[in-house]
Amino acid sequence: MPSESVISHAFVLPDHNFYEWLAVLRPYLAKFERVAVVRSPAGNNLNRFRNVSAVNAPLTWWNDSALVHIRRVYPSVVMVDVIDAQTPAELESVVSQRVDADDRYGEADNDPQHIFSRFVLEWPTSARPMALLERYNADVEKGDLRRSISLLSQENANVICAAAGEVIAVAGDSIQVETLVDGERFITTYEGVKDALVSVGDQLALGQIIAKSSGDRLSLTVQNPPDRGLTLLGYDNVMNPRDYIYIPQLRARPVKDGLRVRKLPSLFASIVGRVYSWHLLEPEEHHGRAMEKIGVENSWLKVSSITGVEGYTAAWLLRATTLDEGQEAFPGVNPVGVNLDVFHPLGRPAPARLGDLGWVRFGYNVSNARGSEDINAALQRYLPQVEAYRNAGYRVIFATSHQTYGEGKNEFWPWSQMTAAKWRLLRQRFADMMGRIAAQWADRDLVAAWQIWNEPDSLSGAASVRMSADNYGMMFDEVYRAIRSADSNVNIITAGFNSGPVRGSAYARRMLRQLTDDVVPDGLAFHPYGRGVNGHPFYSRFGHIDESVWAYSSVLPEKPLWITEFGVLDRPDDSAGQIARYASDMVRYLKTQYPGRIATLVWYAWAQGMHNGYGLVDGAGNPRPPLTEKFLSA
Image (cartoon, rainbow, N blue to C red; front, side, top):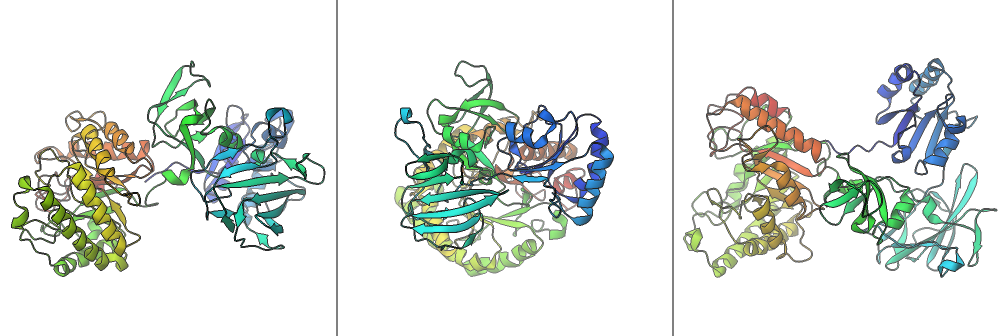
């Protein structure tokens, strides 16, 4: 599933004769991955790139100096690789040498110096959320002087080396580290630490854990001896640490939906777009200054979103995070999958038939419609099938339901007459069974996710057993705990809600209120039957898929959405071409518009005749062109 690109290297070419410059760069682009080509710095924001290779050709940079220009205009760029090339032919020579030597930045030969780095501080604590609590202050007229900045932490959080270097002091609640960058000396003091893991003389790597946080804040002081900065509160050469902060993949997440993005930083400026709680916005300002604004009343931050919205938004309605929070739930795994059925003769196709899909989903049926509780028999029924699919690279979801426990038991029939006492009994027994089932699978590394129940909010009850949101919340809490006690790694997700974005999201919110504080679903699932994208009015007769994504994302914004069923129901004679277009457009749209938001996108079902879904193959197991081929390569 595509995710927002993290490209930390830009290669800037002159605008004049751009395509001639680009032609000689192509071997370099083929050799080194993840390089963004920028056509002249004019009109392009280089702040989003950590490293910049800059062709220092005439009439390209301010004052004809790429280094001076970048340092002046783009304070977030950390490393500048200056290539002095007056013509494309001169660049071709440099490119050829780097490609042959497998040396992206020409680091093997930096004499005369062409690689220029600046001192940066990455975020020094594992505590989340990230927040700057107190600013540096060297102005007497503005109140108390502060030589440090204070960051939000929490007791026993890891304190992380923010700039590689040598430990020069460990005393009391502080650690000092010296860093040399291009001949300049910097000293970083971490205060508010305990249980130091380093000693004087140790060489530290960036990101190394150096101590634990002693409380809810961590202070950083930066000095730049021998003669830069101020003498402040007993420290010489003190600089503002804010100016050195660089947070890889820094993003800001709205804390409310529909947050307005404006053309200018004012409540009276025109609105250019809206962003939502599941969006991760890229700050278009220096990271340190952005951190001073995020969460602060009456501050405005310039941001851009992956959907193309760019402008200013209310920083007090943002919180700081990183792009990791919005990445794929399963990196490198295609979210597209299909529902299978071990009880159906066509419901367990050979893995080789599933093409480029990433997922398969089975209902976990123990009851056999007779109230069976033989979990060993169920294990033997599913194990060979799951092993075959997992060995072929597919991820497996097991969906539990009344067919796992309850079906065929007279004490719970009819379901429409369940009482509070009966639900309580069923929850207890179901949780006990799921704890034992999860233990059977826990050490096999075969199951990616357990899904708790199926469509409890259903309006029809045709393929599910309905229950109140309160009952479902209590069930989820108990079953989650039982599974987690047996398996600490597997994903545990909600049932697929199918009553639509309004009713379904309200049901989900009420269900979540029943959970204890330490129970958080690993994802929220839904079944958007009758929803799709523009151009398919019949198959999208209930509305656009955006409405579902927005509604469910706002319920649990920090977790991905799992679409564990979608498709076309009760239309077996429709054209496979029409269905193919609907399915392909849906997949393409969700992958493009919501990267990192959709963990799975699972079609119902593999074969015609597996209940009432439009099969990817027909009732004899034969392909249905063009649907089969298109979906298996989606």
